[in-house]
Amino acid sequence: MLKNLDKYIRPESFPTPFCTGCGHGILMGAILRAIDELELDIDRMVFVSGIGCAAWIPSPHFAADTIHTTHGRPVAFATGIKLFNPKLKVVVVSGDGDLSAIGGNHLIHAARRNINLTIICANNNIYGMTGGQLAPTTPIGARTSTTPAGSSEPPFDLCKLVLGASSSDNAYVARTTVWHTRELIKYLKKAFSVPGFSFLEVISPCYTHFGRRNKYASPAEMILDLKDSAVRTKKQEDLFTFKEKNKILIGEFSG
Image 1 (cartoon, rainbow, N blue to C red):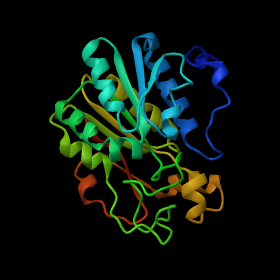
Image 2 (cartoon, rainbow, N blue to C red):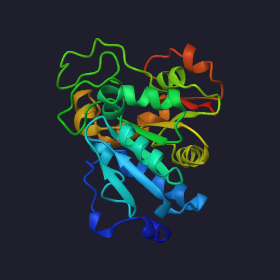
Image 3 (tube, rainbow, N blue to C red):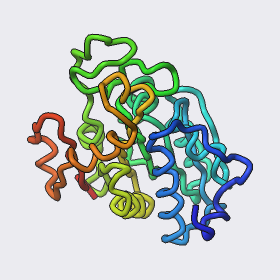
Image 4 (cartoon, one colour):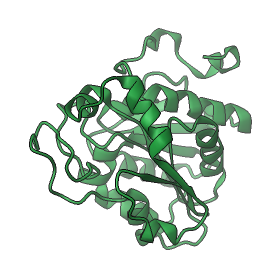
């Protein structure tokens, strides 16, 4: 962690709880770098998270107001905070299971209402903290603890889901990976700056549960795979036509 970011962290919270090869530590650093580059006042920010590995990114690491809520409810809590004090910048940081399974309705209605929230979804395609179960984003054919023969369910495309629910042309919707760190910081800065709803999906690998079950040789191989599998676009329509198997479409889709 760079010295100029020390002011944003609680030293007693380190080392992090993240497994070797987890991308969440990269995302944590990127969030703080975006805040620092924008010169945001972290004392005027509130970070809300649910239950899961990604929920540990802001809480307990950030030296800021954080609230660790019940499973699937961070967007609901964040909405309440924003309504109570609209001057606060309210940021949700949570995982794909927390936000798109039990929390799915809260996510789509926040997009529909264009609530001024920044939602950062750390997507590892699995339930990482609770045993490696099938998640709404798990790719077809992927092995999990509850699908040992491979998933047969089509996954959610979370950016499509949010765009479909959004009521505003000004909402910001984007996707990138923890490999693309400079792009990640750029997208975070945009998400923090939008005067309305913003959603950033960040592909962040889980070697402990997803990688080992799906024959990745090492955590490093999973990280490098993000470089090879990512396909960039600048066109929103590509999101709805992209069908390349084992590839990830990244880019800004709205806003």
